[in-house]
Length: 101
Image (tube, rainbow, N blue to C red):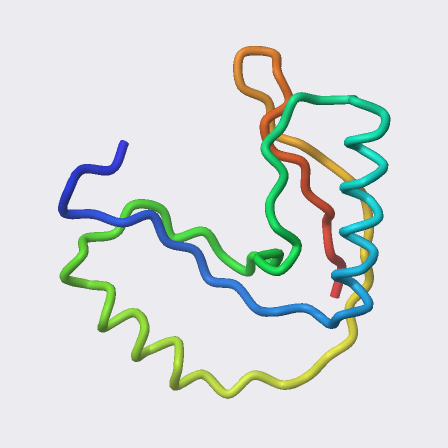
């Protein structure tokens, strides 16, 4: 568990608006079907997680940010794959869509 001197970090990238619309429709379907009691993320905050860094010392955040900003990424193709979830004590807590590159 994180303490006051750490932050939970992950590396992510934005997604095309077309994909965001698919996620909005998926969220609506989950809500309508009442398949799980979940707090739904505002679709404007949806992203593609590339790496989970975990709990990182606060003093290291600027160095990590600088290193990530120096990366020159190429544009590539990706597709939405399967739907999966994380459970906690038998309850679905996080639903996510896998992306294949």
